[in-house]
Length: 83
Image 1: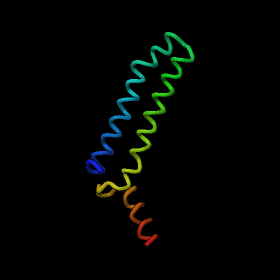
Image 2: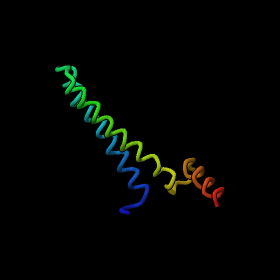
Image 3: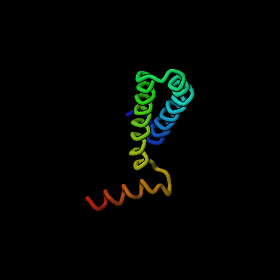
């Protein structure tokens, strides 16, 4: 894989946040100016894409080597229990 988990998580979080902001700045005003099914579809599709990126960044938190990371501590306890 390319990069460390912390780098991938940060990139996914930034990309998802940028997509949400772009929707808020560009697509939502268009949706209110021309309320059609097509403009609602633009907003919904792009927000779903941003949400999938942000959700995909979540599992990377469990693998990050950040001290005190509760997600990492839970993941390590589950892997010890499985072994």
